[in-house]
Image 1 (tube, rainbow, N blue to C red):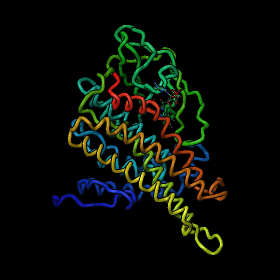
Image 2 (cartoon, rainbow, N blue to C red):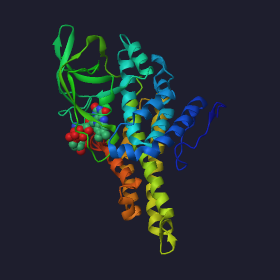
Image 3 (cartoon, rainbow, N blue to C red):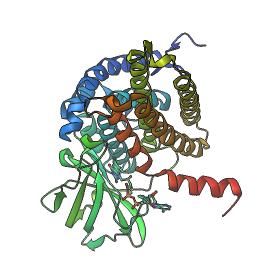
Image 4 (tube, rainbow, N blue to C red):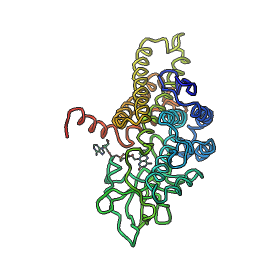
Length: 382
Ligand SMILES: Cc1cc2nc3c(=O)[nH]c(=O)nc-3n(C[C@H](O)[C@H](O)[C@H](O)COP(=O)(O)OP(=O)(O)OC[C@H]3O[C@@H](n4cnc5c(N)ncnc54)[C@H](O)[C@@H]3O)c2cc1C
């Protein structure tokens, strides 16, 4: 193994991680320290359904945004393996912050890359300066297929305009720039948009889980989609932030849920013995822990493939997301059983992990959509 690599017990010691370069480990160590602070207040932000803006600022000042921007557009060019560890560390501590940051990064990196030939340098500079980005892609009529917009942009001079709605835009209320897609001449097309008075936030976000993402509905009223901020379609070689980040969010939630149930099983004494000594608890924990370790390993494989330019990494990421989404719910459900009524209390982290775990399956591509494409592929159905 080269000298500049060191093996790190990644998020927990219960699963394998490919090593990442020393420089990335230093960043990850900083993020681990911040994550400890985020975890201490995650429940309060969740309760208030408030975006932890200070957490996002701390991440920016720690150099996380610079690190994740690809080198080709002026950033640090973090590896996929490093990115995957980062998202899991954040999600285990505070999954809402992890989700907003992943969405912010996805939109910022995409705008820098997709407009590379025109205004890419501008978006990269804004991203490095700490401006906030959000993805306004999902539409009421597109269902889970957020890359297939059903709304048409209307030509106005050299620009276009959009009237309609985008929904579940994480961090919409604090965004300086939106990544928006709409059909131009029938073709899905991406734009950078500065939200102005033509963009209205409809405050629908009072949810079961990931409450502090404040993923609101946005209404667009003749909003200008500027020609100068029009991007090309995403393609091979672009840093696939969202597909690479979403499995990590569920795995981080699962790690936190497992840690919470272990702590409870070890500390709860029933008839003079810790709950962890009961055989059914050991068997059930063994089952979910083995599945969780497998999901981490598949995720690591996908990230490794992505770092090595192996095109198969997208199908592997699909499977990693599918598995991670389901395993997170399984671990969190077991937490509720092991937690008993005390785990059901609002003050227990166990109930929050279950609420958060459920959201992973909904975020595109949902487990149903992934199952359809994976199943068809396996069965050779066109
Ligand atoms: C916490 C959270 C954060 C989010 N953040 C963002 C964001 O920042 N930006 C953004 O653009 N979007 C975001 N989304 C939206 C998300 O990615 C989905 O696009 C959106 O949730 C889909 O709409 P829906 O949940 O109402 O489900 P629906 O589309 O109404 O789906 C209902 C059911 O039908 C299934 N289904 C839907 N479409 C298909 C299909 N084509 N084939 C088979 N089954 C299908 C679904 O799996 C589900 O079971 C977020 C969602 C959540 C929950």
